[in-house]
Amino acid sequence: MMSLLEERQSCSIAELAQRFSVSEETIRRDVRRLETSGRARKVHGGVSLAGGGMEAPFVQRVNDNAAAKRAIAAHCAAMVCEGMTLLIDSGTTSLWFTRAISHVHGLTIITNSFEVAREVMGRNDNRLFFAGGDVNIDYRAAFGADAIALSRRFAPDLAILSIGAIEAGRGLLDFEPEEAFYKQAVFDLARRVMLLADASKFGREGSVFVAGLDRVHDLVTDRMPPPEIIADLTRAGTDLHVVTG
Image (cartoon, rainbow, N blue to C red; front, side, top):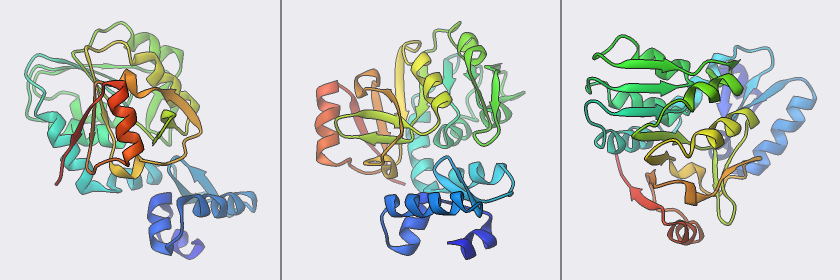
């Protein structure tokens, strides 16, 4: 693992588990050992070489499962039309969605993501409202009370949200508390909430509770979830959309 990190600077947990044919939990245990020894640093969804740059983990996450994220984003983008008001969070699939709506004019977009804001700013007569606050460099986003306060001034037609983990019986979970708190605060703003999650999120063990599946109108993913999660979606009344690239 260290040889790979020295070559690439950062890797995702899912990629390492596949590379070494072990479970993600085994990789997380190894990462904790490396972090304790000071040789590596745990980041959201992955690990980076100690002392390495902060941007690489986000770039790595953007490109993980890129084909699936692109297909999910395209499906959701088809539901966007001129003049809508959108709230878009700081997830990597949310960034793919933002790229997929680059042809739509006259949108009002609220986001706490620097990357989403950069995609939107100055294009197609869109109005951009950036929810600034406490900046998390690894997530390339702002969180905290200021970001929440600005976001809650709006009543979006559609909220595009991502998530770190979906667990049967527990619902939606994440890894960074401030990111989770931001999402908790914006679930009730939009007329329709769409959760974008590729299949790698099913069965992951998140560390911070975000919300139950009943807070989501639509879950858009690239593969059928496990039966127990499908049962949870049915009980919650959440519509499931499975798309392929």
